Image (cartoon, rainbow, N blue to C red; front, top):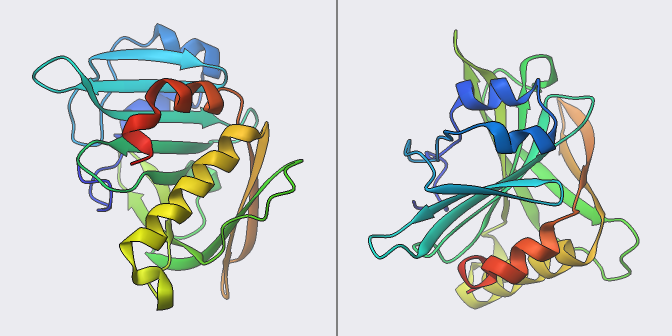
Length: 208
């Protein structure tokens, strides 16, 4: 899986079924479809995050996907990591009535970890990819660091993503915001419960 590319996205059929489930009920689903269409080798639940794990030929974890869901909306916050990618992927997935756009968009993005005094990482953007078909109506917003200016340096981008993960591991709630001149501003608050345990267990995959 090449997490820097937008082509690997969770299958709509799986996530549409998630809309009717709480995060604790995720563990009862046997088969999960990965970004590359393969079933997970195993799944775990840590706090409010359901985690799908994918192994290499030696049985070691090489990829993971972790998602949490808002209680009252068809909106998900997810983290994807791979040994094959230098950076993690952060995504917000919106389904059905929650979608923002029927066409692709570039949006500004920001976040705030509630109760954390450390300044959030700046210079973020989001790529909105719509899917509109009989099986799935969704927007997938991939949050990434801007490639403009000094952030073109691989080292600086790596430091930025690492700082984001460090901040996420220290909080309980994150507010993720997207803004577009035509779509306006949209805020979503997701739980971070379980993120610290996730990174303690699989940090070597996510933080290079």
